[in-house]
Length: 503
Image (cartoon, rainbow, N blue to C red; front, side, top):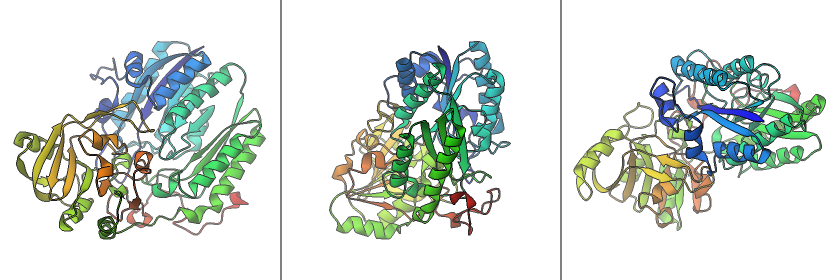
């Protein structure tokens, strides 16, 4: 059986002032596109980048092999989360995918990886538009299996064209590879006549913030366990909890449930209702508590072991610029020792540090250059401890084996604080990032990370204490920080809601 596969993905933070361009997608492709549509990650480049890795593409490849499917990878690009995607960028990628589908010829099935929270200038629901276009091209009978992020803002327009949608179970997304294998297995089951999918979609009047979407703490730990119990029932092929991305001001942002059953739509509907009711019953458990920066620093100063400060408000994994300086300023003023800040994206400062050279001092206005929402540039005279090309191989469960590239990277020392300054935005979720520049996190007292939850994939077992910081930014987990204009209402906890679907 011949299967075609592709990925066009982006998590769009509509509150970010920095638009996402085609160049951002080109940079994210295993084989950058010269602009004529001849590359952008063809089959050979995608396999070279992801074969043998603990990634979604790695899962597709291994899952297809296990199912005896002849998989051809047409296109793969996952741009770093940021502001609204320029319409011309989305249309270029959509049309490129459709053209490659046509050129590839008849296929027995389609396997796509999308994020589920991509917004362009003209489309609040990019994935709904893209899946509709793909379905129109491949016809009504070709099986279409889609994998998505746990933060997908799932819509009916996404669910309708797909035969089944499989979302990540875990946050941190340690199970991307497993969900890729699962998507390929479900497609293989469909092609072999072992599965006739019937999918039910439920949208809850509920919106939640990332820190409490983490599946290794409550309430998500119990809710995920319940989803797995439902999946173990006869006739149930998949239960997906799409917890939504609250930093997208669109009509359908928020929590949804998808259930796929074998042939039995009534079973899928009843199971979706059961899962949705379980989430709704825990709605008050999604409240986030933020800790003032000074309080977290004082804790680290007076307690043994590694303290991790999660500066989720400037998380590049959710569209933050990753050049916020609030935590750095607090650490300098507190004269904190044995501290690390990872990362501050500042290409100019990285370049000037490289010009100064290792072992020398350099005076900089560090960070705070993207906007005025994440702190002002900090004047520093820093010692240049290291310069690198920023390339390392991830070792943690989220992307083990994948090569990451920070671009030109400098480790600057300001008093007792080491600051990792980079050319490119990348969420510092893997402890290997610090180790690659000579910083062993377990030998530091405090590490401040521009991450909301994903850092727990490697730091959960390293840290003695973790704090979610009270800092400003476009990824701040606080509904009061945002003025929603397009979001459907009423929606809990923004409004008082009585939901008949929970009965």
